[in-house]
Length: 128
Image (cartoon, rainbow, N blue to C red; front, side, top):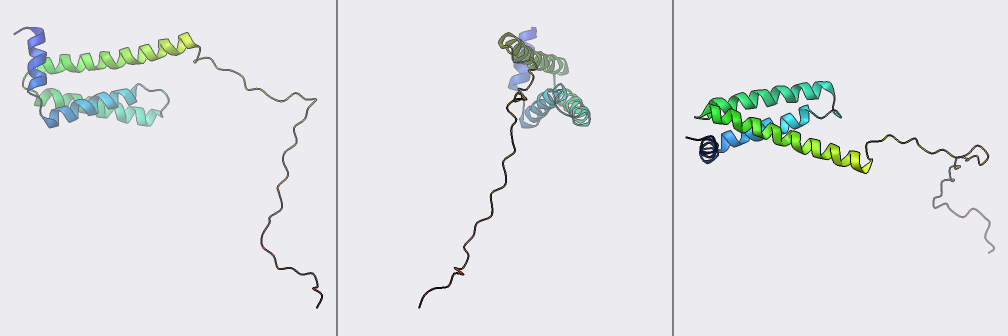
């Protein structure tokens, strides 16, 4: 059995539980490498990714092909992240730009709160 035949047999023989474990592993890995989340969430996501990957490889009959399949999935996620980083670098989206402030000569005054308006009874005296 060749390498490609082994991967094809793993994909053909997957059931719903194995697919769910692969999905959980890949999504958790994506969260774990994202630096915009807190370290606690990233650590938990890495643990879930590891546990899901171990569960997937133990449930799959050909564990060697399952490991290769997970490695290819991780490489695919890394490739997408690398392409997104390269595109943002080419477009200049990664630069931090200073915020613009108003010049000192044109001081900006804060807006005064508007008086509350409501229906009020007419208190002026009415002629008879």
